[in-house]
Image (tube, rainbow, N blue to C red; front, side, top):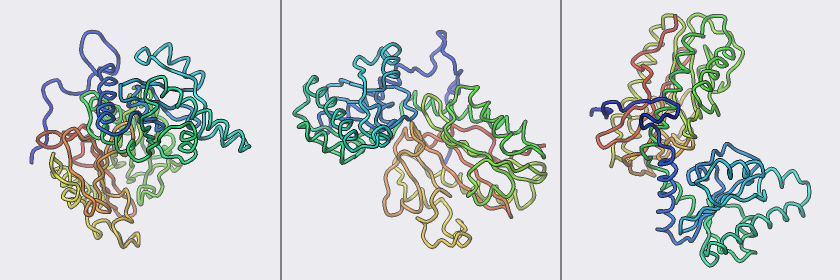
Length: 423
């Protein structure tokens, strides 16, 4: 199978806004996402959904939800396309000024999360939860959906009870699937956001090649790398760099003050680096000096396993068929871990969807896919990752891809044919 080839000039454009060429069209990005969610809502038996999940809120509203104190922001989407958003005082006042595409922004009462937890009294918690439910119920009356079923994307029994006390009919099962279905395939602009974050990660890889050398600590190299990522407009919500014995197994998923030494492998894990909210998962392995034969062989195995999987991914293929390209239990080195079942080998060899969250539909994994397959669709985006021990060290590589009509397009472009050597 051949991989999808991009059209002429279909690559990474600039990160800044300009008036002289079409880049990522953020207005279209927001509009198309909201339309997708609304279409799924209108096809359901729900009259409205209350979104508590940050990625779902961002998908529908375009607001940069990067966490908070828990349910101090939430969004109502009605079957008629009306949107009501509640947020903290500072956020809401700022959004009213800078987010003209949202017409109804209100002050939130934080009924869940850190605020009620820190209050210290059950009466305070009940007040906050009841007030939150009252605000939502009042909005449903204003927009004419008070007699319709309200879907919740995050099930919480306390909130369900508070809403029911307001006379709201609540459904906790439909909304999560509704939003997953809306988000599982990506629009043109969403794909370009992922292409952009891949390019930013490559700037980070380049900084590693310029910085990593014997005597430098992992923390120093990672600090320089993070600075480069931020410089290009990324949100750095995760990632790490390890070296030498810290590269296998990947239990040492933290950057330490270990000094890099000649002959080390250096592994960079760029996960949860985001551009306009779209998350990366992009790994590469480097060698400090000439890699040994053992290291080269391990890398070749990991690369071949990765591309065996990539060649299986196309619209209509099922995840059980694709998962056969990943190593079996022997290839997983299950004896090293003392593992007996594939489900015990979480995260070592798999593919997972990418979008406003690090893990989205689909998931391709020997621990799950053989008994619970789903079908791959054009427009899905995902990261495919493999690893392999190399003596007392290890290699790990990953590609970011989008499913096209004729296979996958590889969004990541850092050379993968062999280990990148740092002189």
